[in-house]
Image (cartoon, rainbow, N blue to C red; front, side):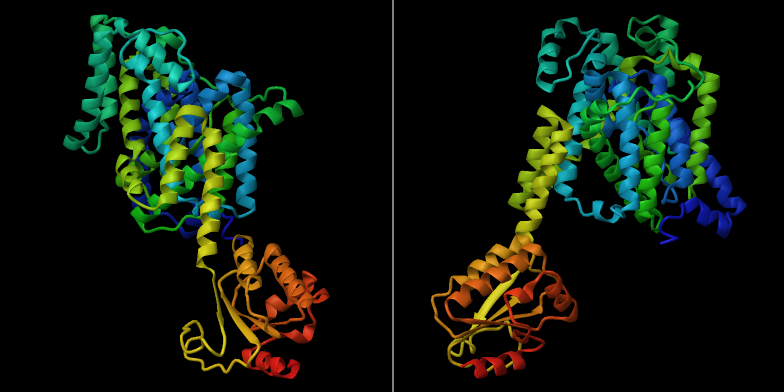
Length: 549
């Protein structure tokens, strides 16, 4: 337990970090910090907040996640996944509502980590993740149309369909300079990386477009024209007034932030593990994410999580300890303090081009198409989550997606539970009892259950056993391959015993392990079933069936 809740950095410092590793972490941190700058600004603007809030989040969350997290190479900060949630909260509750929701989400993440839910989050179906990730990608793409085409729409609706209606009404206001900058940014971002591995194409696109727009006075929107100056200082930490009504209103968005942030963070940690051959501590990672979001909210920042693209960049550039993440945040801090006056000159069409590339990578079109060719239930979860995310709300999409995933799990678990009976007439045909040659007496029915008897399978079990048209004197239920029984399973067994008792049929339960025997006591099974009819093996059960007859 102590190791599970120990930050990875603390363990590595105890082991010792070599000078060579430290140098690589420093170089990687500088590169990732430069990469993170335009992304932090772009994510903030797309989310409906001022640019500096993205930078503040990247600095604060980056330091806390790297210092206290459970991954060696995770880079934390704002990500595209949060754009939809943040924009929706800003529209409904304003910036104070966002701060409170992020603050609450931080405590939810810490609670999830302390309850060791980090391991469970890994089992969320991939179809659900691809569904809302693809939906988010489409929404991010849609949110950039205004700046991409230079439409100068002062207030873009939050609703997806209304947004596109407004776009089509304003397409006669296209700014061809904006389109040229946005398209050039996309091309440079994609292809420059193939020529020069170490320098991200997005940085080159920002520098070139900013210089060209400034020198030639090209009429396109910039950060300065829409948002004014970018502050080069932090505001003092504060928290808006919180009351029960506010918490009640914001608990759903806070829950969505916590779930989405946790999933993305742990996915990023898993991906980075495969790249470096490491093993992250998922619960400690959640606790660090929670702390990062709490502190980020206090300084007016936006939600943060592990960023897959920046984490991969860190690994590819040689980062191998959490120090690289700390260096990345310090680089961002230096840029904010020294170069904020220049960052305000960045053209918005350039940031729109960068976000379009990010949306394309987030869309996972290959995986989307692959799932559409697979299992029917996976397709239902994928499409339901996708359309709910795009048309309605990410919070609703996550909630309904999780419910659908649970139903899918229950259905598949129920199908995995096999219930088979054998009589003296059918024993030569059955194969569930391996090579055993069991001589089943006349007027005795023998059932074997293979699998966990939980609420998803209990009804099937009860119907299979009670719907027999035979009238035996004894029914033996063999449970040697039943690892667990939940409350619904125990209730089904009680119902079966009562039904057959009324018919004058005795029920004997065989193969119950010691743990299940204790659970029988706890669940009051012996109020309907005599202890002598719960036996350890099939031979004893058959012996009792002879005695009863």
